[in-house]
Length: 475
Image (cartoon, rainbow, N blue to C red; front, side, top):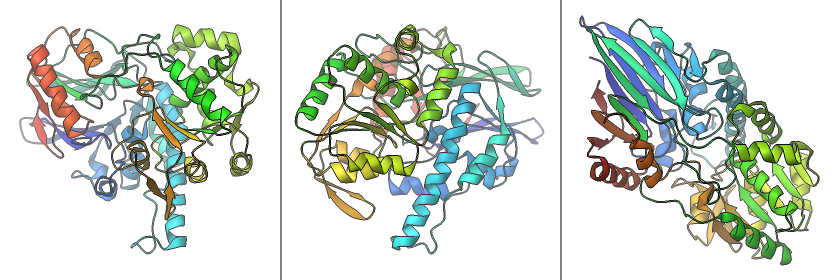
């Protein structure tokens, strides 16, 4: 019996892992493929799953099909390899380039966290160990194999897949899997994360062309539901963003933006540049404080085939962000420390986007207690993360074992999201040539997944279920 087992992102937003196990009529085990291999993030009970073995030994998994580079989809790959996996990891060329910087950085942060906990003895584990090291993350990159969009890749006589565009981040894709057994062909579609169907006037800054591939046709759909219980604001965020920055600068404060180094940071920097050039905000120093910042921009510029017309126009107009006056890409720790030595107004864009680690912690520790400053969220904050705590209106947050008071202004601009919301998902689903026999919702909080299920049943009449952790469904 062929089946899919949901080993992550079921009932939670992170840790995407979906195992496809095929077999023949004799009961002999067939090919086993993992679609995505992400880190669990957020609440402690979820993060502890990162340390648990999969129900299938890693060495028995034949391949990994990766939809995109975000760590909640790719960040467990070094751990899988550490446990004995040695098969190919398939991804689009841009995804491979991005994983080349994201995975080693993740290993580096794992090592830093372990070192901190050992130094402060702020853990019951003696010694605290990293989930994987930077070196282990770099070694796993040798297993990556490029697959272009629309190219059919045959993994066995009975198993093939191809990538179609998801338009979520650079290189992001949906995986169309075709299984053939006993003369029967089944098509499975794994969406990964689905990009927005964009109107650039209400959601500017989109660096990629808009919208996922339309006109899909599948028997079984595994779909994300991150924004299944909400709609993105239908207002242009630029006037509000400009007003917030102007006010903060007038007060002598600094704007601190927790942001993912990939995609979101580039988008934000382009909008800041545009607002400065049009005189809507003052020209203050802009710091992209991330070791990955320069590499991410270089990869971004390398894959111009995915640019939206607006992005092409901005680059033609202003050139590479790496060469913009008064924009600083801070690579070393000394560069980062110098930012905090300055008491003058500035804009600091730093990772991680959910404030789970990285240099953003140091900037927030210094600036959260000062009401002149602004913390501007431009990305989703998973429950259990520090970003979620700060965004939710808490009066304090814990960092490096210290309680930090939150007196700075905190604002979230939801228009920057790269996830399709309920209306956009339904708009995309209406383009399907036929209804899938079954749809399973993953990668969403329980309330988001259940509300999206109800909306899909009402609008489309489809058979929709919310996937459960470790649930097996027959194909």
